Image: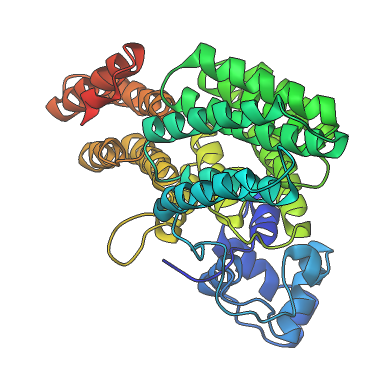
Length: 429
């Protein structure tokens, strides 16, 4: 697992120009500075820039990049700050421990609340906000059913507080806390195939955000609507919901997520030009945000997630080389030395992307191997997994209908689809 922050702004510029790394390197060498300085840029140098291994290229390369792109180095995602290491990929507290930390914190919070004269004090609200953050950070790795049950329990306890004595400011803050928790509940409901419950939670989070004028929370509620539409094949609705959310989200993680969801909707309908533009806009907003303290938080957008979203966009656009590049890097960025992952759902989708690429190229063994790898990951969004596995299954059935391996994958896919329809995720274990 690398310790670098990917330079998504540079990568987005290259993708929008439809250049391979080798082609970009050649164009850099052909600029006036490149010719005068006899630059020897190559594919590996561009890769190191995009991976974030080099945060500030040497002067001749910076000048050549500006001549090629018309943009200053900072606008291309480079930084003079030579910070080593990154909180982007690996958080200080592992997500798997976040659920335990939340339980310990909540027990302390309840005791502190009993000692206060008011029903809800400042310490209680701060502890609640921290507890909700921990639950959101548990999302990437904690089984959806476990997280759903814990989140429902916390919501019931917080709703009891809403009925107590509150100042106006306390009421607003508690509504925001409840809104984030409700949005998280909607996400895990959807992961489990509980569509009606997910939509109810989404609408509730939206209403709470609207009541208190919290643009980012409202933006995430729109993002959930875009996500649901994407999985359900309503691609025009994806773009509409994403753009509605962008109108209220401000400069935030929600804005980046909404822009990338717009890109995915555009990719699904085959609009390569606008999908590239949306990916570039998302990279620009992301570049303006501070580095997150907790990138594992579900409602925080990190640079690695941009690479993950781009992989799926290019898979749907049938740009196989670019899809493979982004998918492989997604797996690399999220795989620890012991083989475990800090973002298993992203890794599962990346395996599906690679499976589709291999199938298109005629490598059935590799295609099925990648697909099976996606099914074998423990933490899964069953709804998303069935949707993406369906993409691979269609390609396999179109090209390899009579092959035993294709039938084997189809059987796994059918089992997953039945597990989703019957709300029995254990069928996949």
